[in-house]
Image (cartoon, rainbow, N blue to C red; front, top):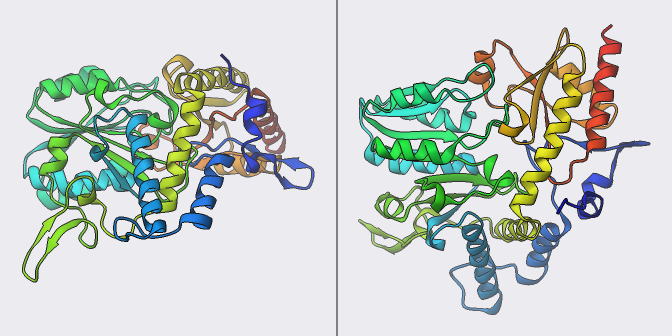
Length: 408
């Protein structure tokens, strides 16, 4: 059934504010971070008020409560992406750290000079820079799947690249600029047939689409809580158990060890081997509450609502003279609309519509090579989520017409 957006928005206190007197907020920047519903805020507040303690160490009541809440959050996240076991969910700071964890542990333990990594031209910097660093350090080769003019990956080139000796394929499940939903299952199957390990940047796909790690058969999946109604400062890396068990620890310190002696140590079991030091406990609790919230709605319903909003948004934006929207058609993309307005810099567009309460993003969105591909320095990006309404699209469009009026 369609979401009751008016009822749902009551759970998000930020959406009720005015950015200045008489100017209500129109939040269209959910690809950068999502707003937080009351159940998430309350769960974190309750933790700090009632159960605040460190975990995995103490035997007193608060410590045991905190540990249970932290591990229950892991169970929820594992269930959300259908991980076979909770040991395969590693809590990190964000999707960026999740990708770096795989790069610093699995990749550095397994890749050498001349080995090939396949990436794509639409990657976020988080799935580019770690591999650039590895290439500079180890001499691994990087090749890139091109993006077509309509914002899709050129799978013919991908298949051609896979005829070489490929060790790793790393790509985004959904572009944060174009909104393109990539065929993760097909690309993973082809990569495995070529003998490659697959890492998927799920920062945009996991919050917006049903994602089943087992059905997709990915080897690594990185995602962040703050993109899916949860708090900042926590993310997750899903990995296949055989890979995680063989990988060396990422960071050294407390909790990631089984035993320590002056001259050696033995690392802890999964998942604790990769979680050194005191973790983001309250944030994990909030992450779990965000998963509860999304599961109560249903990810099919989330995806359906976004499809309805992006379809309407593309129709409205494309009717404006001088606007060019990048990316594929609505049936091949998520709730992201990046565009340019002829004769106006994207930052000017964002700044002017902000005076009407409309919050959008302007810049290269941490995807500079993709913008270079299209020969533009930046875009203005409107991005949507479960609380977005068609009326907010109309306010964005009205704001763009005001920009056109100001710039003549």
